[in-house]
Length: 580
Image (cartoon, rainbow, N blue to C red; front, side, top):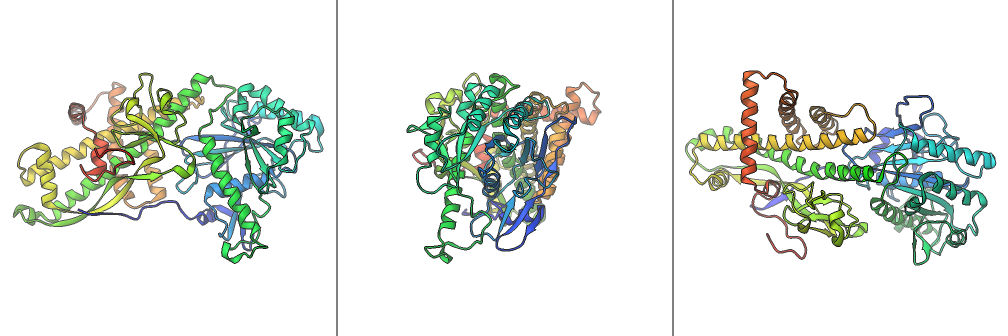
């Protein structure tokens, strides 16, 4: 039957963050300061950290540090990037500030002379697929002179070496004005200091962010070349991104409203958005560096992050299938008389489908499994020649993410992702009955059909518990790497999912909470067995049944994810691939 996408929560209106902000000034645009929560400091000497939004442990985290001389436009650039991440458009009549330029304060006490971290916890609607830690540093070359610059360098070292600081960095952003004809000794000193802190290989992670830029070639690039500053280059020039944030908080309007004389404002905005998009795409492929962690541990962390992110879509699909079966069971009960007399009836239900999403505009590619029709890593920086070294692959060249744990030869780097969407479909009693009769190869009575639905329901519960268990083990190892003494257990992680469902209250959340509550009980039972605790007779019987169901699933060995997302039909054919 034909299916139509349901209206699900997608990229939200950036205006919703105004409820989490403090109004600084009215007008067009109005300016709002994001409300930040201070992260608890264990000791007086621990670094200052603030968070916007609730912590999102299941999302990958990228860390970038901003360096720049006083007057370089660093603070305004940070605010501009935050507006980009939150989805603010030129035509919107509001803007956000993470840091207030007038006092260089967050909403908390002034950190003018301190290195400070701001964490933007990922949520739906962000223009980047990860949480982001922005490390702001005091401006170099201020009135404090070389002594103050040296103190800032030492603060940076302590920040990354501290057990309660940030233990890795993905990008170092050197902010410089476009018209700068030569670098000062202070600016050269900044680079040398950073190299001394992180080692020479940190040069791969340095990116030049040019402020007060126009459409021409910035003079500062030649100045950086003359100073022989170590940083990545393209066509002989430092890799750079151009911004002009002079108009960030100026009067807004649509492009049609601006005549030629006034059209400079939206052009600046467009240039900034384009370059921010390119910067964050590049950031996704940078190899993180660390003072505390070895390269091996950093690689393990990346693999764990990829696994956690890759398993979450599978879990969402499984929860959708639980909702679908519940709906079918309710409809069978509601039409009991029709079922007994073998009369057909029709009802609506929701189910997951696979949709192809083009990501060419992001400048990145995703690693997709061609057997499971699933995106295993996005973005993926490894070419197909080197896919054995993709973070989604284990030491044997098998994927740790896709349901089939398929070999690397079944994975390709492509310009699209496989996304899971929810669709509404009309089904009939005869369709459902025929589906299960085909699957088991026999005619089914009313009671037998209900039994098959219940069996599938429990199978899916087991699969969700299995996925959650894998995710929580990955998160526990990530906590161990980060020296966090209180890692989440599997039941703890499920409880966190329940809390998140309540807070977000998306369509179907009550059904998902009910399903998660049942799965939490299974996880608690499995935990009791693992701890060798004594089980009650009914618990022992339930555990044996669960183990039998898992064994039956392993024997079947079918691609459950793909079948759940397609109902056996309707899976989209990727460009250039044969219909499977």
